[in-house]
Image 1 (cartoon, rainbow, N blue to C red):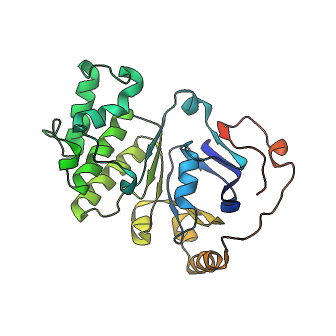
Image 2 (image 1 turned 90 degrees about the horizontal axis):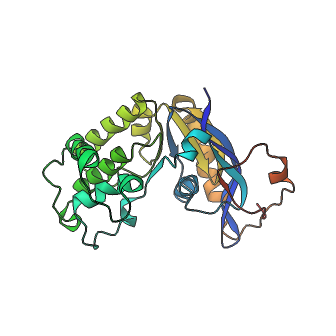
Length: 266
């Protein structure tokens, strides 16, 4: 199976020390993968870099050119990073999934409006089009944000802690949508902390503690020895740890990355 997304010796640093350290591997097209690890393991940092929002200091992130050319990479950040104070209606938030078609100030009508209404129905939020987002519960807001992803219709979907603070019914409903994306052949990657959920719903897992611990079939990756190693690695990392230097990393890579950082330390 070809790769939808490749990580090539990816190192990402904050204030001179690595948050993600020399991670390499590939997400196969159509795979459903959880990224797990202890607190401070670099999971959300890595996902943000995959979304193109965080600079890669060394190494590269490569996308399948078909997906990259169409800018079809959807990213859902953590709910804690969503500003609900801006007076947006549900309809406008979901329409952001189609902004490349309608533009920043385009009219929401015709086929796009039909897609938005269908997406809201899929997340059980039909009839909420004119509701302001600051009037929604946490679960309702996450349903709306999933509707935006449905409208975006991307082949690669990145989710950062999508189930935090959600009730069981909302979690179950949104898991069904994730499984429908997987069934459609989309590549879905989610940062998660609930290991039982990962075992029950995500066939592939990337386990990290700043560096890669293991990546493969979930049942193998979440073995007790791997989890213990991840915890030990996390405790061993010091924020003031010096960088290692690997010369020639970028020069040795084949192909052109979709986005990558400068050749710094790592």
